[in-house]
Image (cartoon, rainbow, N blue to C red):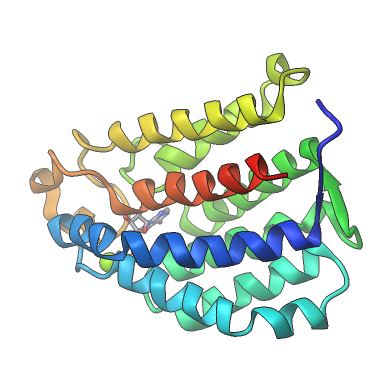
Length: 216
Ligand code: ADP
Ligand code: MG
């Protein structure tokens, strides 16, 4: 893959972007969750990323490397968000940097590995499979694109764009499903016809990373 290098500042800026995106999408995501959950998904994410941004300067100053910075972000989400998505996205950020400990910059290939580790952590914590009508339905097809050997020599922006597109399709694919995990499980067949809110927020989160990559 190309020579793209992401410094710690990339990840710090992404946190601000995530906060801004979630403020815009909060009511939309909460609306999706009102259809098949308890109507708080956007609110939960907003609580989480407001807390992250409040502590951002301190978390940046207190950490040397990307991995420890992301760990603090994850711990903040885990600590502040009451819903299922707090621990899930919290685990994502806490574990994303596990293979790049001590690094202050990473290559695009390492970055893809970080996203994959984050998704693995969501799977470990939530135990959802593809087809369970959760964020996994978007996250797993997304990392398959990032880890695909055929994409190894392609332009990073092209690869990451394809990842986000695949994730959008994954989110769409949750519409006809009955939920096997999370609150929507209780609805049984009544969940059919509604998109899973977490699958939608997860591609939106990845699109924020993409837009920041484009600015490098
Ligand atoms: P809560 O369901 O506690 O109100 P949120 O509304 O913030 O929390 O988040 C709901 C989203 O969390 C769902 O749309 C789904 O994508 C995701 N989710 C719930 N349970 C799981 C799980 N076990 N594994 C993966 N994702 C899950
Ligand atoms: Mg909810």
